[in-house]
Amino acid sequence: MLWKVRNRTFDLSKNALLMGVLNVTPDSFSDGGRWRQTEDAVQQGLKMAREGAEILDIGGESTRPGATPVCAEEELHRILPVIETLAKQTSASLSVDTQKPEVARAALRAGASIINDIGGLRNPVMREELLRSGAAGIAMHMQGTPATMQNSPCYDDVVLEVRDYLLETLHLCKNDGIAAENIALDPGIGFGKTTEHNRTLLKELAQLQTLGRPLLIGVSRKSFLSVLSGKKALEDRFWPTVALTSYARFCGAAIFRVHDIPANLEALKTSEALLEACA
Image (cartoon, rainbow, N blue to C red):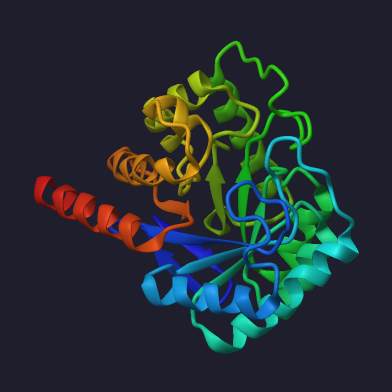
């Protein structure tokens, strides 16, 4: 399976990718404010790249449950210096985590090559940016908005509804002239889902694989891990994240958005060695 990211192509048929989370925000749920200063964010990005992250996902607006939106100007003020500097200092692909087409446009000009859109690429202007730039896109499913998504999320069949949503996104992209090879899909674990919804989606990843595009899984440090493990502290979500990276790799996921690179990379390598032995 190939994923075209502007001037490079990732072959995901045997090896998955790690995407390092780099939140340049004061209010993200796990590391809000830690990388708010440009130099700190750049150094963290370079560290993750050295550790094995092939993509750095840079975001300037928190999407945690209940988060307050920020304007495009503020988002750009936070992320552009980081993207511009990292583009000169690392060969890792840079992703911009945004729902705003104007932010995506500026980030692509600054050196990003991927748009990671929790809005699912439903905004036609965002799809225009993808087509114009040749960048890759990640379309995520979300019920509601970050401010409302955890207010009693409800589905008749969460797997079928997420699958149909992502399939519709692929059709919209195709109709706009965007090649399927440029698109990856994210079921949106934790975005408008209960713990049971998340568990069902992870259990049934094979149904989402039928869409024929790389699946991105983002479970790193999320609150439902505390429910599964029975431990409430944020630091206790480290090993459950690693466990789900290994599990989801066996289920066919190909891109993993994580905060902690070394342990998740070891989990991937071990899982892929076993998959190759069983082939």
